[in-house]
Amino acid sequence: MSEASKSGEGPTYKVNGLDRAVGVLQAFTVERPSLTLAEISRATGLHRSTALRLLSTLAHHGLVIRDEDTGAYGLGYEIIAMAETARAGSGLTEWARPVMKEVSERLNETVVLSVRTGDHRVDIDQVVANQPIRRVIAIGEHKLMTFGAPSLSIMSGLPESDARAMFERLRERTFEKYENYDEDQFWQRLENIRQNGFHEQKSQYGKGTWAGSVGIAGPIYGRRGEVIGALGVSVPSGRWSDELREKVIEEVRAGCAAVAARMGSRSAVA
Image (tube, rainbow, N blue to C red):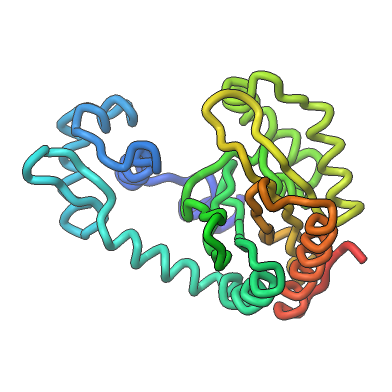
């Protein structure tokens, strides 16, 4: 047994109170940014008194705030400060931002930077197009790794066993959201990304999903050849054309390679 395991510092060690507090924070979503105590209790499976104690502690540290009029809770501004610290600490945003600006200026379209967090993708930065009709992405929203050009670009860099394990974890939610999801096509798309360095997504499956835009994204490779994120371009479908498609593909591939080069690595796709 390793020293880390003996001391309780191994990867399977958890502090129950902290684990529950994280669960409370993760109960808030873009769709439901405000929750009552009862809703938080149901979402986390915690007893109301336990949830209340955790909320009081989180509020003391500015991680949640309580609306005195409604009694509902929401994430506090300290979360924003921590998110900015995380973005700065990763270095990826700083490496990618100049490249994103250049790509956006050349195309005059929205450019987005995405990373993986657990079994989800999160868009962490964007440079918005200077056009009357343009795509604006919801930063920080958790999205399924089984759909979307950035998600598949990131998944394309995972070992086969890890990708399949993740797909199984997301299977139920994927087919619940996208009734006509084509699993065989998904695996073929990952292989195409490995070969070509990009993926194009024209529409979402199922009801209640966005429509009217096209996204092309590619993987950003780190120093050890691992995929550390995705750079993508999102365009309203009304402006889409074969000519623009070729330009976007070229810019995405070159942009991913440029970010990798700034980090001292290189794109795995020539």
